[in-house]
Amino acid sequence: MGVISNGTTLLDAGALDSGVATGAMTLLSTVTASSSATVSFTSGINSTYKEYQVHYSDVHPATDNVNFLVNFRDGSSAFDATKTSSSFASYQNEAGNSTGLNYEGSFDSEQTTNAQPLNAGGGVGGDADESTSGILCLYDPSSTTFVKHFLSDTTFYNNSDYTIRSFIAGYCNTTAAIDGIQFSMSSGNIDAGTFKLYGIK
Image (cartoon, rainbow, N blue to C red; front, side):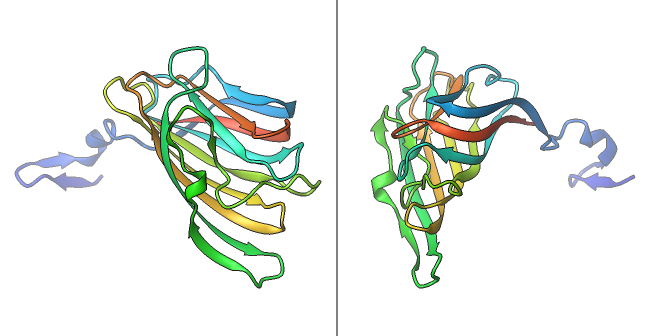
């Protein structure tokens, strides 16, 4: 059994373990999209966990060249929390002759209630083999003291045959609790995709 010193006393690591977060993931909900206008998580986001993650896989738009969007609910019935964010992306095309890493200011949010695009760098392709996957993290959504930080790491098959990795970071500028998350496309339905909500211990 290990022993840890804090400089003045020796602590039994076994006793210390009981009070330390382990980082375990708990699956709270799964939604499978099928020609869905929106995919929403409207329960399970509360003070139980300090971090929540949504893992989205093989999200296919019904329409070509669209934005994959997220928005947050802050206690009302609408998904319209005010957001500020910053975006950048890395990309490479299938031919291997076009690569880059860019700040993508046109995908930023600036104190807006509009939905946040998660596909910085270009539109998500709608061909049969094109889709997007990634992770959205939301931190301490039940705090009534601080703004609510979020970030996403998304990869997608662009409509112009690029692979793009998109990074978004921002905050919901409210001290009200965030109690819902909603995904959509900028045009048309979410044709298919799996969305899993996790609580992070």
